[in-house]
Length: 229
Image (tube, rainbow, N blue to C red; front, side, top):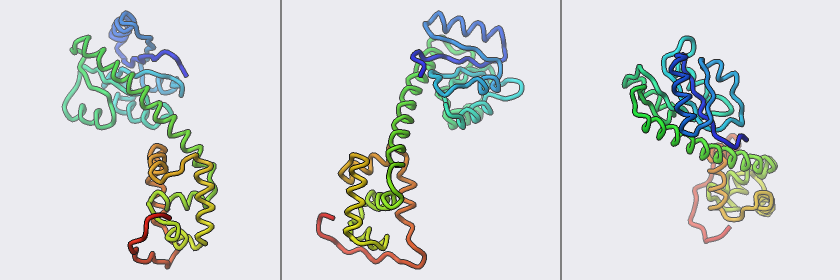
């Protein structure tokens, strides 16, 4: 991964591009410039860090179109829009799509630098979150299909006997699978497993799996149970 964050400046106005790049470098930032969104996307590398300072209206791919394409890439760097043609609907759309800020080219240099710094901090935070999710997903992929099924019910807070009934397996088998899960993930408590699944972005997937039962099978009404599994 690149050690130094870079501000990638995107603008089709060559004179403005040169001027803003000079000011950013004078403020201590590493800078790379692009005159079209398509060129930036073609050059984009997964290990690039920092943020993008982008114009809104450009020939070919517009700033909003570039933002949408960037969000689908392997490296969705934060975007700060700096445009001479802002309006409320466009600003709202850009911010709704995840832009860090939307400034006009008449904004103060202090405001521009503040937005750039927030975007760089955000990139570092989101990069850490993505790395954590990838690590968690790698651990999840080590589980067998049955262990994943059991895990889906565990994070729902279901007891071993309930899981056994849902999956049509013996309760002792559920216990064995739970042991395999905790050994492979290094996590023992249900609360920790749930937090881990949330960090991995797996809760929705696991919730859907836990709700699925074999065709024709109905889950019996739950009765109060004694504490424990």
